[in-house]
Length: 199
Figure 1 (cartoon, rainbow, N blue to C red):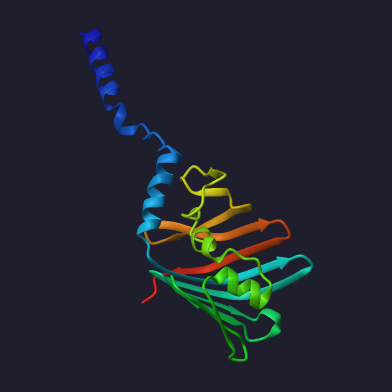
Figure 2 (cartoon, rainbow, N blue to C red):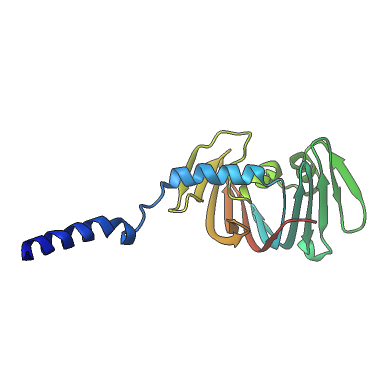
């Protein structure tokens, strides 16, 4: 009788084990694939924060507001050069830069416009993906590192080294909060204070 009770107890404990054992962790690479699908579906987004841009021996600090809706984008830098700032508006066909004094300049790409107007060799088209924590969709990835949640911690692409130092919760996912980007003599630091969906 005692042996029967012992056997019954062992079988009960064995059968109950899956109820209290922790679930196996998901593969970071699988989570990364899911994250890319999420980001591809996110066609409208906005953030605000601070940025520091260094090129050679020159440096600029500015507040930044960035908004995307489909192919349309609006970027406002407040305070560079100790002035009111600049605004960059564009779509798939043209880009316009509005200076603090109201002067406007236009070009086919944001890279061309910023290079001509401000001397910045800044890959704005790639930044539109990098700031969301995903690689630039039009160029191959040289290397990447993921955390346990399948988020980028390091990315090398187009000669740039990007570090994702911190993320913040946003809707049903998470978005970069602190990003450091470096290429040759240029570096960009971004600290985001708020992510949102534009109305």
